[in-house]
Image (cartoon, rainbow, N blue to C red; front, side, top):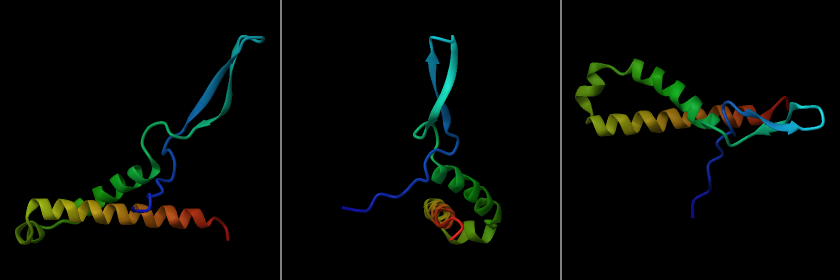
Length: 92
């Protein structure tokens, strides 16, 4: 069994609102961490944009489209994993 990959949580967590019926207003109670795109996917998409921009016609001529796309996706995920790991170190 493989080790699960840490996704970094939600890229854009939404406030978890509860209605305060006594006062008739909403109050934020923490954050919904599993709403929307993961931080890992968000970083990978940004990295992928740059990698695709650096792809040359020589790369396209040398590799099949499937191989080039797979390599691009792997590299983008590696960049995302590296950034999440670095961010996890904090101010140590």
